[in-house]
Length: 227
Image (cartoon, rainbow, N blue to C red; front, side, top):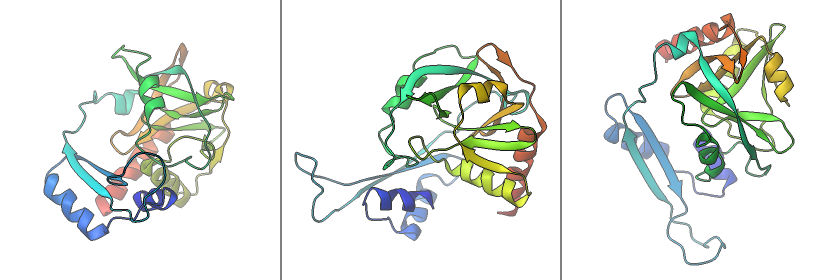
């Protein structure tokens, strides 16, 4: 469970899973987006961690986002963001409340036809979308950015990697440059709310929604039906 891994990295006590599941069921009994936030609780001034940590847990439910249905099949327009992500390997992968870089990157455009922005780090390695993880295909192989320096390891990203592994589809983490992304045969984005969005355009470069994004969507739907 990603929450447990992130709590361990941040030296936060892990919430009891049964209690958390009960709270999620109470705030979101129907279809909803449920957000669980764990903080270190009350503290005084300064950065020293209290000897006894009493965490605060906030569990909230929100309406599902109303994205255009055709984005799932026809693909989305994406832009390159100007903001560069800072590198901090000790926090890389974790989803923390410090998402200011993503907020600033998302505020670089207001065109509703553009669904997402891709962000690179200061060395020009493409890392993620403002709210999504990135996959590309080259010669039948699938690649996703190495997130060992910065970026968020999304739960859906890891699920897709596992589903591809079961299908014996090569999926590798590696450094990706803009040249790799622009030369890709297929690009798709993932997160827990969008499932899979094929990319049909990055800036002026056009792509045809490919078969792998459709296949991944089928695998997710099948996995949901079983689970």
